[in-house]
Length: 237
Image (cartoon, rainbow, N blue to C red):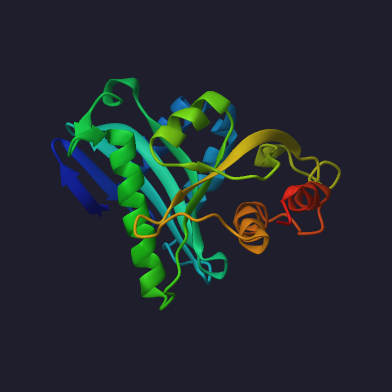
């Protein structure tokens, strides 16, 4: 089976992998993830299982695993999802191989081009649910320098004290240590909906953005200490 071709432009091809059964591209995607995110390579096992499911395997969630090819070779990846109850998308991983980072498409960098395509795709997901509101996609950014770079591309840093949970490899989980999750501080930002004029977000909306990651994506309980710390950090203006 062959994965769905999402777009093709100037030697760049983007394929949707979930539920495709495209074993060669799925293998390339997972190998690329382990290469570009070595500290998170232990997530590959659960990601491999997720590729067997359709995008909408979980109600209210449209999950996407995009493999980016350049000149017929794996060149990058983008993982994201639309979360209907929160009226936003979340970007869970974006990485490009060094030889593609200087590529420009339609006069902008490949990264910015992909950000725009993801926002368009998430808006289409929202419309497919009959939901007229879509605020953009939020991301957790570990490195402040990378946050600064993304701000130049249109990302807005959100006033949230955010911590990214790091889970143990699945083969190390047991009843004694399953709850031992480490947390690292990270920046929290949003790429607003391309059609909206960014005017700031209410405390409730900021809470929804944080819970889209911590509760909906990472499956933490809202009562978890770090989740509550994040919620308490949100300004009450």
